[in-house]
Length: 270
Length: 305
Image 1 (spheres, helix red, strand yellow):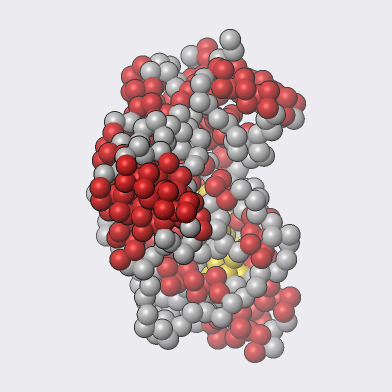
Image 2 (cartoon, chains in turn cyan, red; image 1 turned 180 degrees about the horizontal axis):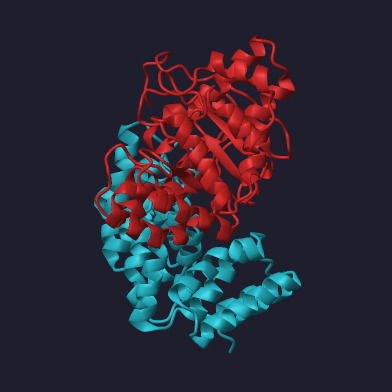
């Protein structure tokens, strides 16, 4: 089974011009050899986009399947060659355990936005992933939506390592900043009662302000709906927005309480 | 379409960004400088540099402006030796970040020995990393300070065509141009240049190697100084080509040398916003001229939704 670093290296080899590829291969070898200083490591990581460019990483279905086999949940769709290149060098020269976690922390202290996004997308690939959880939490605290989404979207890390409070904050924040829930991995598996309550509170706050609610919200409410939540879903069923009506119906279908059934039947009858 | 090469946008509001975008400013450069309040430790310097390579770049993108920056230890804080030593240690970690177009703004304030030491060290860093340099010329003893800055640049073997000498006036411009440097002019009310004077300089010296900027910051200054000056020059009969050269073309030529600022960044941005952080101006795609919208009046509408 190839390791993620080897998969990324082979994808880059297939896509990069020979001189760019040879620069990367040399850097990887030097960093794996352990002879590079901290300054050289930092410079190499900084230089990646200047040497490799920022083109989209071209991946076919077979490559995506390989990625998922090498690291379940790893989804490199939408990555660029500089992001993959930076992660190759970080994995090559970063060490393991606390050494790696500290190195990642240091890199993020002086990272530009592109680096910050790359390092957060790499979260599922790191050795001893539980040690880098504080970095993931910082990522979802970011006010920069692309940084938030680097952790939250197409990334198996949060569902695997975030405690419930952190998970719930991430989901509610996704809605709050106008992002989307669908690309969050493990959304249904990690749904919980506290999250359902927070989302219903949020929906009421939005309605009170005369602002729209994302239909995606109801997906996390259905399986854990209490009496109050069912009444919120009843209101959503009567929404003027067809997408919200559909979302409310889909959410009610995941709830096995009698009131949910009754609401659904009422809708069907219309 | 304008580039403002000297803006301290961390001190400006979203209204300013909207007004700049509406007036046709497509890109701005934020030179690292002091904050008005001196920093007391390297940590706050790191956070400042992170802000201008990160958060401010993102913020500008939300309004359709491309944001670049320069990295450097400014001359005022060069006089705090303990801080300066620590900042010099971390500067190389920032100099190669995305969107860093030059080492700057560096140079002299009081022209002390410490200012001289760190100015020279940073010129060597720029040379080593093959980056342009933005020079801040001093407010006091300006003419001598400007001459001395250029002497030191030449002494360190940098090519003047990679170096912008900023905050010029009528007394300094001749020598700066004669020695082959780029000459920046900051249209800043009261202290630096006024734009009627600017127009006379363009008339007298022509547009070659002259760059007009605003130097807008936390003082009484104007983030629309570049488009306003362009309009004034237009009304004053300066040719459209000359206006474009001093408010756009020269800026791109000088600060684009390091490869971090390209016209395609705003004329033809790549389509994936998640990576490019650029929420503005889809009408720019495909190399068109931007559409200039009328600026939103600040007092016209009382409703906030």
